[in-house]
Image (cartoon, rainbow, N blue to C red; front, top):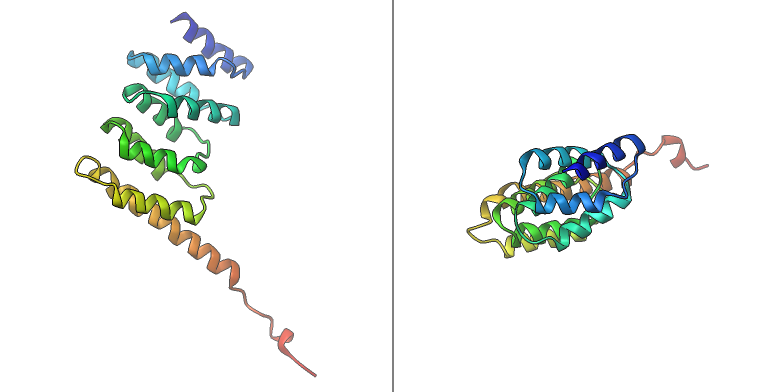
Length: 173
């Protein structure tokens, strides 16, 4: 695992993330908890948008299993805004094995970006219509979180359109 140690040093010292795709492949294939923990911690600190693109590509194409769950964990532990991928996470929550689905639900519950209302409505409808005994437990926190996001959007819209008028602006001669 010299490549992992070298890559970690390269990223820490130089900020060069060109080796990240290779590290993600190692993370997908490796079951060594020490390596997984170190890589997850390291990659969670990488905040470049290029990294987000690479991570999502690996995540979407990864086979089910603990590797995919580890990539999802990086998504929710990082400070990167993955809001535009809400539909991808919903799909994973509904279709993946339990551990990856659990991580996907956690990602959704940590999204706070500017997600269009329509996208949130679609996500809620999909989760409600496609739920089953296997994933019902995971949806208990996810659906209310998405509904809360809609309420906040409604409140923000209300605040944006509601304002007080100064008395003087209504006076006429």
